[in-house]
Length: 346
Image (cartoon, rainbow, N blue to C red; front, top):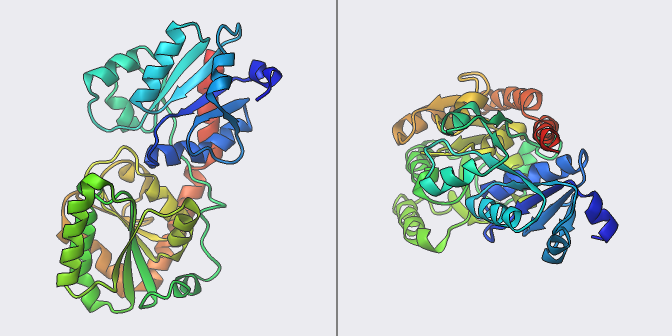
């Protein structure tokens, strides 16, 4: 950025995490909408279109600037950097977004205490904080995550067997409940030959043994061609996969929010979700989705089976889910809430 642009900058959106994650995805989604409302720049990896990009030379140029600006952090490392820069003379007002639905570690609590403002992504997340927070719910880009003109044709272009897809997206690990999904699919797919199950998400090195166990179980069930683990995909490909799904299974045992909930609903997929993250906030049980207990593969399978038996009912549920999300969880509303916090500090 030029010196003139830097002097008018109001917000630094920090993304200092090398590995792409759900936190990165949520920040990338809303950042361009924020940038339409304030002069904002993105510092770090995975910058989205629609927001200015900052480098570390730009950051140095902001030292001792007279006008304050916001440093928005979403992780501990970004809070640490913000606290240090403020101590060294950078004119930052520090904001942290908390999505966790659990008690924070002592270091996170200490860092939160150094922030000038806190945003919580739900009332549940706010309840785990020891100070007041502004609740701003995540939103989804309903135009981008829109149902396809022809879902059957969208799935057919993949070349996978059957006529319908059921998906489970997110990093492949126990916390996300990928094993619960595989167990449910091993029970159901032999009875519903028109369905193929698709797992999309990164397999990190430490989760390789877990993923290998899933693959062995799938092979033992004779379902290697019908439970497909695609691994990590570019975001545009992930969007297309949401649009191919008839049913989406949200299987997390523990979750901060769960963006895939509202992404799948926006794309018009019928939803079966464990009561984790924002599921109980987002889903009207029996209408826009079905809620099941966490860590219960049998309950998951029992909730999914009626939708596999009746794809037309699944399509109707998906249409209700999209209407619900579009009305309640837009990115414009999320950006308005975030910018209100910025304005109060600036």
